[in-house]
Image (tube, rainbow, N blue to C red; front, side, top):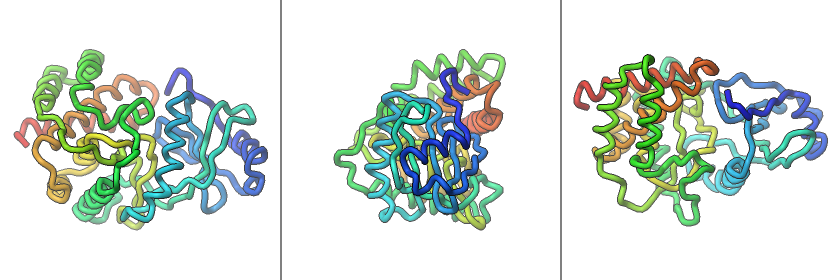
Length: 301
């Protein structure tokens, strides 16, 4: 998917464990199929997971460090399970950067067809977002490269979004998405104190168990910023009644909702051409979000 992507396999994971965490080196290691774009995941024994970033650099170092600093503090404060880091690995055995051993959380991707009651799931996710935002943001990391700039003002994405619209020529109705983008771009900016954000609440990062929302994984987008980024499930997961329930439970103002919709559109537009030949699942997700945003605008929602 990426020009500089690192190749990983079970043998590499075992070598890393033997060098740094020999107490776990004899456990079963199972690669986990995923449509994710940032990490390779391996199940370790029954209760742990190994996450190896597919790329390295200063941003990845900061990303892993913040997860180890903050997630253990968050775990008891949030109403859904999160993967608490257990150990931080260092470069070794041919792998060039830091990596993580964390708790394994049971579940499957929380797609709409796997949720027994989407309205309940929407309300529970909104309560999770509210609980996260109530945590004291003092000393939390501001948006930056480490979290893909999630939580920055929507206007900061204008140039890249317009470039992405041009790059989507022939793939979508570029006139319609340009009009939708310009409408949401006019929403007033966030002027309240910044709050904690997960930054990537996509179905692939939400876990369901027995039809109920159970966990939130992949905290690489963690930071302190504009909460509009947390609105994305309205267009990447929920529909109709569940979307309305999500918005009602969040109690957000119209401007934050509009910025969230603009962010959903922007992310989808950037992802669509980038992953067109390499990640069909991401392409389907991007097309879905673009369609849902345009439908919202057509309804005047």
